[in-house]
Image 1 (cartoon, chains in turn purple, blue):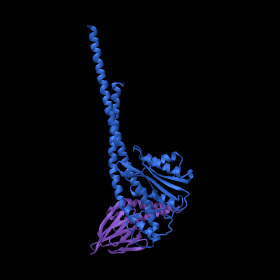
Image 2 (tube, helix red, strand yellow):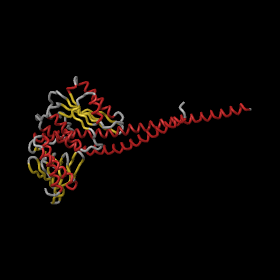
Image 3 (spheres, chains in turn purple, orange):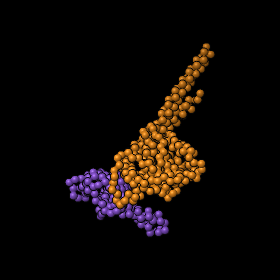
Image 4 (cartoon, chains in turn cyan, orange):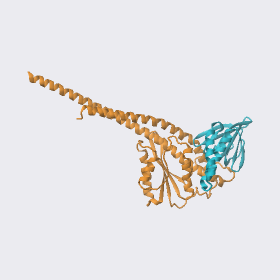
Length: 136
Length: 285
C-alpha cells in the first residue's frame, strides 16, 4: 500500500517521524483524513489527537496541543507547540493539571482572560488523559 | 621584596582560584554541549514554520492582518536576552551596550519605549537606570523548554496585538562558534520581512487563509522568541566557558611567576645566610 511520510515537530525537537498509510485528526474546520497524494493543504488543529495508520491498523496516537497541519503530496508535517506520543504522556501530571484547571473554573467567573486560559488548560489535560487511556 | 611566607600564601590562594575556574569551565562545557543540541533540535520546527508562514503570507498578499502591517510607531518594545549570572566575560555587557546605544539613537524620552527583560542581569541594569521594564523573566533554566517560555512569549506577542507596543525588537547574542558570538538585532513584530528562502508552495486553506494566519502568526512570533533564547543560551555557556578558560590560564601564569619569585627569594635568603656565617668565621680568625 502507498505510504506518506509524517513528521510531528515541536520547538523542543521532533516527536515522531515515519511512513504511514493514513493520518487522521481534527482541524478547526472538522475531521481531516489525509491519504498519500493529497493536495497541498494547511489547516490549524484543535487540541486533539493525531492518529497514524500503518498496515491497516492504528499504529500510534499523538496528543497535540493545537498547532498546524501542513500537507504536501509526499509529506505531512504537524507543527505543534507541544506534542506527546500516547506512551510518553505523564498521566499524573495531566490529572493534576486537570484538577487545577477545574478549581480555577469553579472559583472565578469574572476574570475573563484567566477563565479562558483555565478552560484551554482543562482541554489540554483532558485530551492527554483520554489519549493515554486509549479512549479516543 | 615580599617575604617567603607572603609569596607562599599568594601561590596557594591563586591555586584555589584556578581550581574553581577550572571546575566552572568544565560545567559550562557540559551545559554548552546540551545547549547546542537543544538549539539544533529546534531548527526543523523553525524552518518548517518559517516556510509555511512565508507561503501563506505570500499567498494572501494585501492581507490586513495586524501582525503583518507596519503602523505608526508610538511605543517600541525591546526584548533583551541576557543571563542570570555573570562570570561570562563580555557576554552580557555586549548585549546591554548595544541596546543602550540603539535606544539613545532612536528615542528622546523614556516614555517612547519599554524593556522586556529576560535574565536577571538585563532586568537589574535597566530597572536601576530608571527605564520602563514592562515584563521580566528571571530564573531561566539552563536548558529552557518551550513550556517555560510560553507564557512570557505569548504575553509579549499580546502586547503587540493590544496596541501597547507598535513594534518590537529583540536583542540577543547569536551563537557562531565556541569562541565567537555576535550581538544580533531582529525586528520581531510587525512581521514585515519573512525570509523566503525556499520555493513557495501554493496551499489550500482549511477553513480560510485569514483564520490560519490568526493562529499561525502568534505561534510564529513566539517561536522566534524561543529560538533567540536557545541561541543566546548556547552563546552564554560558550562565553562562560571561554571566560573561565582564560581565567584558568591567567591563574597558571600567575602561579608560574610567583613560584619563580619564591625561588629567587629563597636563594637570596640562603646566600645571605652563608655570607653571614662566612663573615662571622672570618671575624674570629
